Length: 63
Image 1 (tube, rainbow, N blue to C red):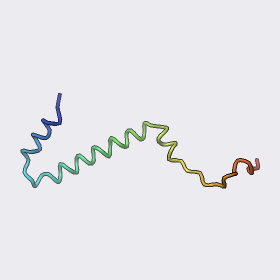
Image 2: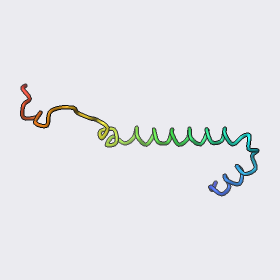
Image 3: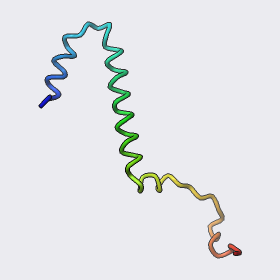
Image 4: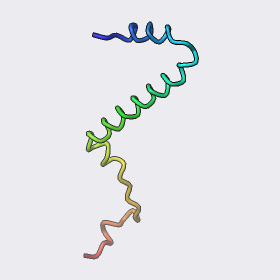
């Protein structure tokens, strides 16, 4: 199993010129993981729904 310490060790062997590329790759992975979690979490999506209406909208609605 790969550990963070092993990854850090590998990164420490890279030249400074490659660090920007590694950083961009890590940010991309984080963003993808966040999107996966959000897509799979229905409640998170429902919490994003905003309804703009008067406070007593449900009382005044005419069907």
